[in-house]
Length: 238
Image 1 (cartoon, rainbow, N blue to C red):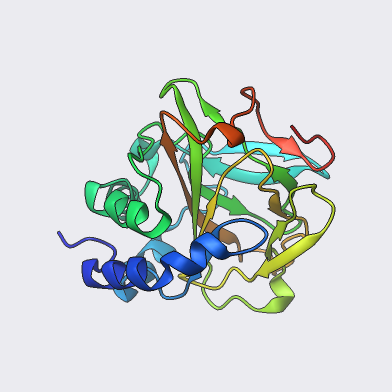
Image 2 (cartoon, rainbow, N blue to C red):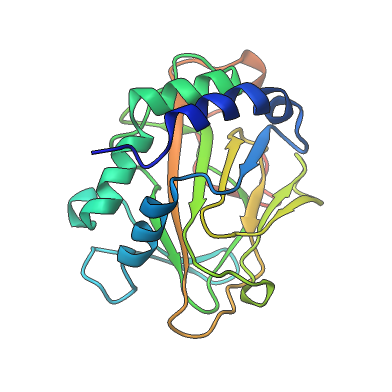
């Protein structure tokens, strides 16, 4: 079965976007449109579970901080989504990430801790935060976030834009619209603040759908090391 991505395209992106990823502000990141092959992307959107489907959704319900659904149990996912997650944790994809970012010895997360698939219904939001920095089961530092948006025909009226904020969590620096088949890759540190505080406002039955994968290393630069912590919302910097 083919990968959900094209290897030649990944090689070109890694070569052409490496410098811009590393120089991006407020922290290293890059945005790729039409990231997955077109047919698999459409199929992933088609089979993406709804909020009432039996996929063992985890419910995140802390108004003002985080309101969304998530599923990291791959056994409950439709086969196309499970296949995509495996591809995005494959050796070939890890090699692409290492070349693009300059981060060596990256590890995928077979446990999908905090990742897998995410869905927001009307009113769903995610406050500005920095992610947990340590994976206890892997005994590894979280280094990269990959988000791939799978809501067809997104328009500005839907809201839910990804915001990247400065290291103090005091000012938005970048706004990224969650366009269909757009991927966002960004560095994960204790000061890489981000979220989508603008609530999802599409009509009932139209959901903010995304794949989320995180990548790790057993070591990280000394200047980035902080005590292990869970999600840090704006104002609770480490």
